[in-house]
Image (tube, rainbow, N blue to C red; front, side, top):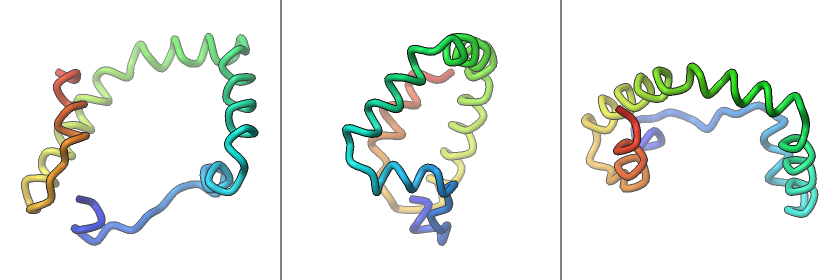
Length: 83
């Protein structure tokens, strides 16, 4: 849907590295991060404010989707969990 509206693919270079590296390295890195005290605290802090942010993003995506003919089954399925 974003591509149909002319938005390009923009992501930090670090995210692109996940596409280039073998999956086993990505799994090891994510597993190590998730097992850390940093992740425990960061995820808890983020979860405390994420609901409002997800609701706002869902509303903005719905507005963009309404301007296209593109089907968005994944967004439709996920948005039922965001109020």
